[in-house]
Amino acid sequence: MLAVAARFTEYSPSNVLLIAAQRPDATRVAGIRTWNGLGRRVTKGEHGIAILAPCVYRTDDQTAKDRHQARPEPAASPGDEMPPQRELHGFRVVHVFDVTQTEGRPLPDVQPELLKGAAPAGIWDQLVALTANAGYQLERRPCPEGVNGWTAPQDKIVVVDETLEPAQAAKTLAHELGHVRANHAGRFPDYAVAHACRGAAEVEAESIAYVITSHLGMKPDAYSVPYVAGWADDLDMLRHHMSTVVTVAQGLLSDLDALSKAARATRVLQIAPQWAVPGRSPVRETDLVANQEGLRRA
Image 1: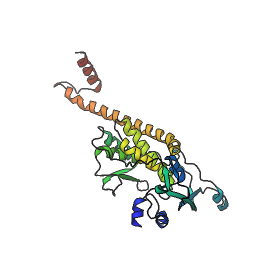
Image 2 (image 1 turned 120 degrees about the vertical axis):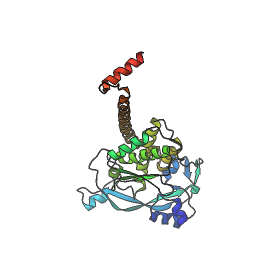
Image 3 (image 1 turned 30 degrees about the vertical axis):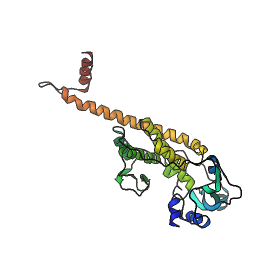
Image 4 (image 1 turned 45 degrees about the vertical axis):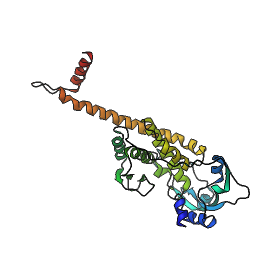
């Protein structure tokens, strides 16, 4: 049982029990659409592994009967201040299949690789500043094995593992900021109980981190590509969330650029005292610019 639980950490305890009871030797399970998207087909005659999927519906001004007949509403946009209230109304049976029950294109056994080395100068401090601006407190401390960081919206805390090298730490913080700025706490209130919600949130957050770090000259492919592939059911999922990814990433990059410009301006002002001459009044910023222009012409 523990061996099965260790292989399927993204599934609820109830579903781990169901998988273990029906197919204790399972290693990688997914729905038929996911396998088809990976170029594999379920072998004829195989029986699916029954698990439970949550049924979540809106709860605003609907009768109990209407709620049971309603369909789940689409996710709200990132900026919505009042996301639709949702409530769990039971579970339905869905079927997944282990990789050994499928045939077709070989699956690449690629795991995310932690980034090594330094991050671009100043990027960590800028990401920390944006975290604080969002009302979150950043903590560096040990994380459980296999976890690089997490965000606790209710406690307004972002945690990044203290053992990560600077490049990976910056990418992880960008990922957690992606969760915050994409309003995942409001848009995916069922993150903890619904695999589909968690998958959508993780795909968005890591894609946002990928766009940001790539734009800054880093190479996150070895980590981000396998990570996103592990959470995305198919290409349609990526396309569905691309608008949010681009919008949030552009906003973060704009804020990072503003912080970078402010830092450069501060450094210029700190140079000013070096131009002071005994007996003269302190050099003003406009004088500094004029003196620098004179040096360029000399």
